[in-house]
Structure formats: C-alpha cells, structure tokens
Image (cartoon, rainbow, N blue to C red; front, side, top):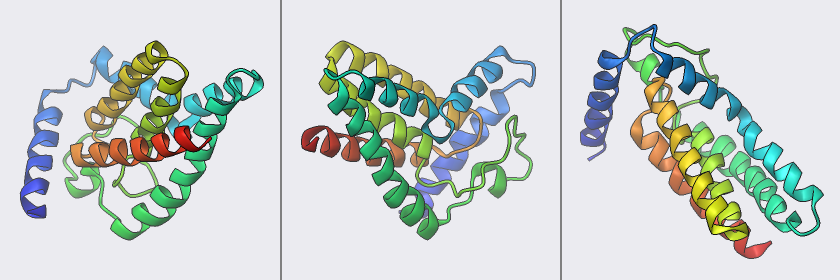
Length: 172
C-alpha cells in the first residue's frame, strides 16, 4: 500500500515539475508564501498579536501551545523517525527554486502549523477561520508546487496540525 501511495506521490510531483516554468510569477508568489510561513513565522506573529489583546488572548495561547506540541510531536518525533526524503532528494533531476530544507519531508511542518492555527482562529471567528483555512491551503499547495513536499506530506501535516489545533482550542 505504501508503495502504491509513493508512486502516486511521485507521479503528481513529476507532473507539477514538468509544468513549471523558471520565469513564472507563480514560482515567485509561492516562494513568498512559503517563506513567510518558515518556522511558523506568520502564525507566531498572529498569535503574539492575539495574546496582547485580553479578549483574544486564549486564541493566541492556543496557537502558541499547539506550535510547541507540533515541535515535540511532529519535528522531534515523527520527522526524526520517518526520515522521508524530499522529492528533490529522491529525484535529483528536479529543479529546486528555493533553499534546501534541513529536515525530512514527512509531515509538512509549514502545513501543520498553518492548520493548527486555523482551528484556533475558527474558534475566534468563523470568517477569520475560513480566511485562515484558505491561506493554509495556499501554504500547503506552495510546498508541493515548490517540490519541497509530496502531497501525502502535506495531507499528513494538515491532519496532524488540525488535531493539535482542535485539542488546543478546546483545552485553552
């Protein structure tokens, strides 16, 4: 079953790679989206802002707590144990338009942090939550389009982040 999923991942990545153009504005745009979410930066800025306001403090704390939980579970445990190679590491013919990440591919940390933030923001306001969800999907897509992750890495990150986010939003 894992081989079958891996073959589908490879086909999707190779298809995307064959359609990309080096001078594409899409590459520049998605590089920007990916970069502002490095290390969860955009979500940590939002969380810090929310923590500063007494009426939204709990939502910011939920994002911060979720980020710490992801760091332990996702980065220190799952990424270290799975050690999945990234698409550009597995297929050396793929052209990478960004710097090479230092961690393994599964799960996507950018996506996990985005989706855990969505849960807290949805609790704050459904409208803000929907906008955050759309932005989280854009981040997830950027990671695939830039050949930094396989689709299943992004799906795994979205699921892990959503679970962590919902738990934190309910507890805090």
